[in-house]
Length: 159
Image 1 (tube, rainbow, N blue to C red):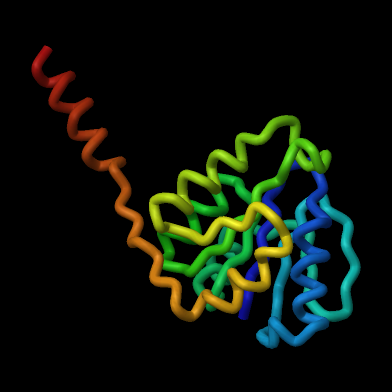
Image 2 (cartoon, rainbow, N blue to C red):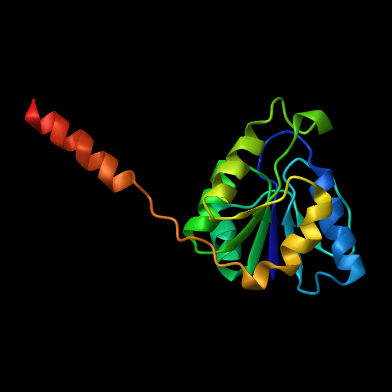
């Protein structure tokens, strides 16, 4: 199963859903697709679309997914990378009216360059990204939260 995540921002991202839908139609994607569309209104008879997911259902679907195609939101990317999923991320872009700036481009570029995900910056690259996903071995994500908390605790204790 492929899970598509558009997050919860009140901005549409039909460009990603249309690209996924087209690839289903072409037979490039043969697995079932579940799309969490958020505020994006999109109708398709080729994938199951949901507006929003409660946290428990989100975690369950991420766990079941063979791959995740997501917008460039750091929360969506991190949740999936931490779960060890193969992730393709396509950023919302200001020039397409999908966001107020291009910070998602920077987020996706950073995760892509470090080897955690496959970044797609042009929807024409979604098909090759999906086709090459079987050979993609994402770098395991290691959180620094515990190390940072220890540094802070040591600092406080030293005072």
